[in-house]
Amino acid sequence: MEVVTEAVRMLSRASDKPVIVYPNSGEIYDAETKTWSGQGTCGSMSDTSEEWEAAGARIIGGCCRTTPHQIGELAKKWRSYR
Image (cartoon, rainbow, N blue to C red):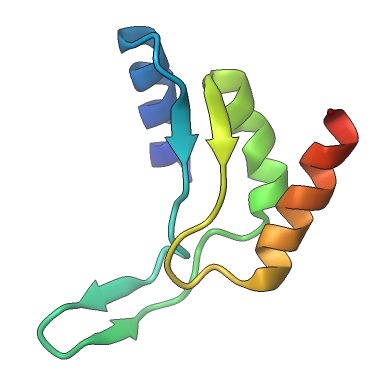
C-alpha cells in the first residue's frame, strides 16, 4: 500500500485534477491462465484510506479482489467525515 500512497502524492502534485484510488487486493493476476495467486495484502483499506486522503486522493474505492466488506468499511468511515 505504500506504493499507492506515494503515487497519490506524486499525482496530486503534478495535476490539478482529482486523484482517484482504487487498488486491488495485492494478489497477482495471470492473464494467460486467467487465475489469481498469492495473498491479498491490502488489509484494512479503511485505515490506509486516511493516508491516501492526506496525500491528495479525493475518490477512494476498491478494484479486483477487494471484498464487499472492505468497500462497506470505506463507505462507513468516509460518510461519517462528510
